[in-house]
Length: 432
Ligand code: AMP
Ligand code: ZN
Image (tube, rainbow, N blue to C red; front, side, top):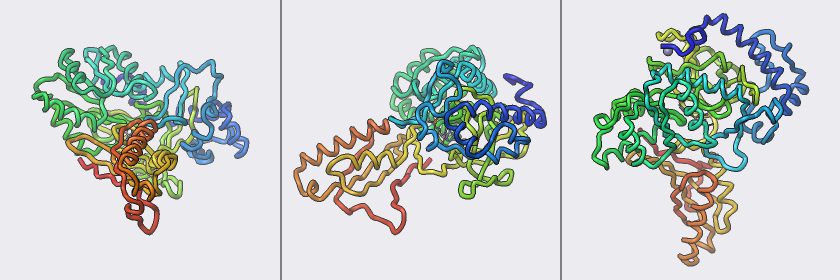
């Protein structure tokens, strides 16, 4: 039932002792990076500043912007020779936030994720099909090595190519999958097109679903269509990737692995800690990482701690399903997109007017993005051929930036309604 019983059911007092040691070690390690060295000197912080876990509040927060501004190597805390792998957050191109790992970091991550999938019921006898993108995104290689460590057979299918996914599932009697929830729903329509019923025609019994927010209702719908159990998997590339928090067989909140991460929930406006059990922004500190230790990293994800102990016997606390974000990041098909990226690209294209609006839709379980773009007056009264060329250029440029092909609708100047206050850039019509 447990991958590492001692660690998973550790007495909380002992866990907190380990966390304090981990935090002090992390301060020492982080101080070797360019960024934290500078911050610690400014704020006069060192490992001795922390006498209890509560003292973590003396340390400033770290944000995605800090990572971007110190790109690429400002956060590494070991010599470059020690690094063996790089990953980055999904979606963004160019200066994406990158994370570097030593061999020990990769081993620790693999172990954490093996612990997670074992907890959900994956065993050596399983055939596991990984339907996530392999490459810089952490959901591919991360799961791949963790499942190999358990000893199950891995099919590194990668993302997309729905008919092939179904073929692989049937040919090799896949019993477990890793899939983005919106893709699981989309794939079910391909089963229907092929006159197949996933409940009868496949042997899948477990799914790990994550990388994007989804409701309990959506999870139940996926479970109903496929006849398998779907476990929520949460992570972010800055904290390795998947394997930060994961559902146990109780499917009631995700155990967050507190031997590796120190957890805080803060009020995103005041930045003060919230009362136990209250909703706020999740802030995480790595306790074991060597290559790129991060202190008080603001995930921008909204959740709460479930204070009650879990009936599975694990003592690591649970967080609730992610409710949303405190910034304007969108996740479409598992890819992170900031409206700012779209704005920046659009404004570089001659002929584009001053306003735009992103509309997200879900049709037949398929998510898509439409961008209404105002064009400038000269172009609008010009030739149709020119407008079509502009539309194609915008599609191309945006695709290279956000990795998703948007539908572009060119509209008249000043036709997108402007409100009184902050411009509304996004309308999300996706419903379960
Ligand atoms: P990335 O760094 O590309 O792996 O993206 C990480 C972000 O994806 C997180 O900060 C969350 O906003 C989102 N995310 C990942 N897993 C989940 C999940 N299970 N539920 C909701 N959001 C998730
Ligand atoms: Zn549990």
